[in-house]
Length: 119
View 1 (cartoon, rainbow, N blue to C red):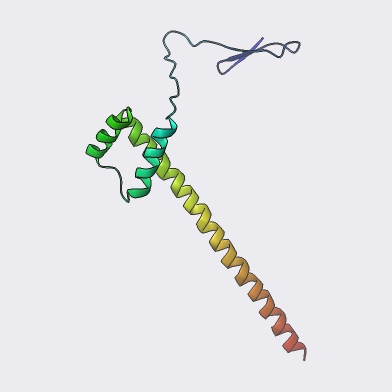
View 2: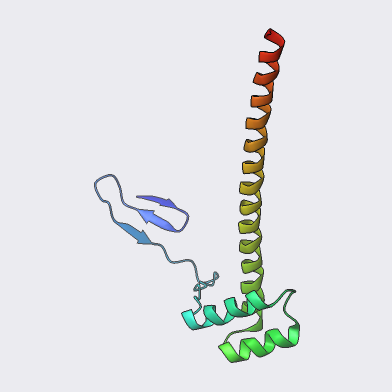
């Protein structure tokens, strides 16, 4: 059998995959997902907030949603990162469209110049 990064795969004859449990010195953290209601509330606040969440508001929101303030902070941090990425992609698309239009215009002018020089 071949062991690699917490998994044990069988030899070539077997396709089964078994999870190897970590030693007792390592804690296994379960990834916690937010409910749809929690996400809707967080998204609504994110859309309305123009700046970072104040600590008091973060604690209040955590109580209302049944989460830890740290979870709220991390969610907002991740959401800001996703928002920034989408904004950069949108800006890139606009710039590329402008560039393509300018390039087409330049090529057209270059051909027109060449035609005038040949006359």
